[in-house]
Amino acid sequence: MSKKTKLFPHTIIEEINKRPPYQYGSVAESYSGLEVTWKLTFFTLDKKQDGKLLVTLRETEEFPSVLILSEVNESEYPELKTMNKGETVTINGIINTAKAYGSITLIKCKLSF
Image 1 (tube, one colour):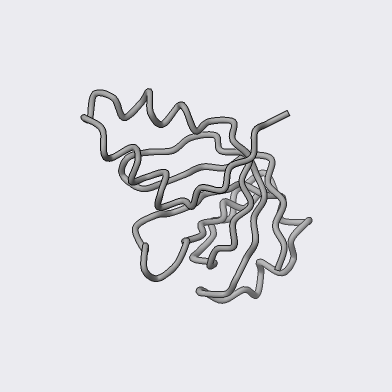
Image 2: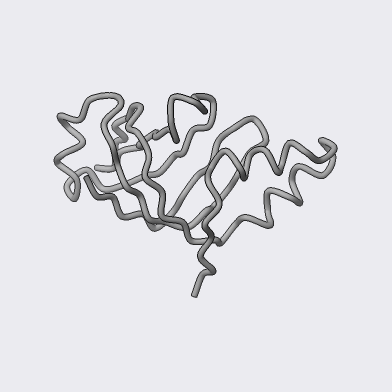
């Protein structure tokens, strides 16, 4: 069972960046496995060959450089085919990776609109 966090995406990236670059990896790893539920905005998606979509979300316009990435099955989320940039998406998933340059990758995700 994963531990749930109430941290926001930008807070995670800020915490990583407070450390010396040598420590980025170990600090980022401390967030791996945490369960999150975030209300985000749709940014873009990439269609993959295996019937999956790589969905990119942003926290808000205030933090445009923080990107949240998740791979989902295209067949489970037909809404993504007509979604416009900036629309609200709630995502529940587990942090897989967090990078100092501003990206967080989630796994085992569920989306709601």
